[in-house]
Amino acid sequence: MLNIVLASNNKGKIKEYEELFEGYDVKLFLLNDLNIVSDPEENGKTYIENALIKAEAIKNKTDYYILADDSGVEFLALGEHFPGIHTHRYALENGGNEKLNPKLAKEIGGSKAIFYCALAFIFPNKETYTFLGKVEGKVANKCEGNNGFGYDPIFIIDGFTHPNAYYPDSVKNKNSHRAKAVKSLIKFLKEKNIL
Image (tube, one colour):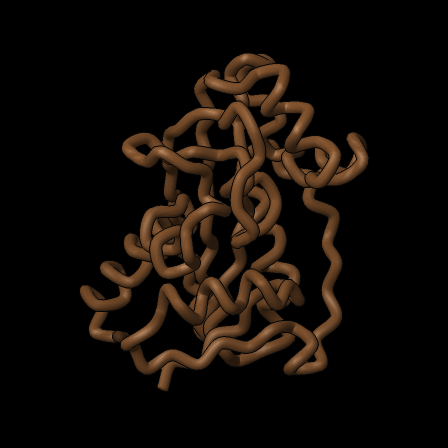
């Protein structure tokens, strides 16, 4: 059994990771499950740096494997790499995704967007590895669907006809930026004979 602590307390995120690791002998824990308190300042300049900050903040608080992520979306119509590493803050500053998503759909619907997910994975011996997943797509012209969270109601992956939130988790989670990053991590763990 591979015990992995997710450097997060987001129940939606752990559910997604549990689905991505389905079929493997993996047990995931949130910080709260292990009574770990961590709230580091994410002041990195890249997704990878921010994922590393979150992972390294707890590396001396557990003997489990550690998985931390940082993700963001870039709307090319709003400027290069924007909002990028400030994706979450951008939503909060604009009244949350429920208010922001319809506004974006109306103002920049049809324009190109890219979702990124960076993973930092720390072994119990403190060896650290990083992985990056990316999906390209576009902004929908209207919000659609009730699955997922964040920008899922307006992000359409290239090759799909509806936003992520329209599809069941089983479809979304196989094609997301996070899924691509986790596939790279799983491949790496298999090569190391850990999975």
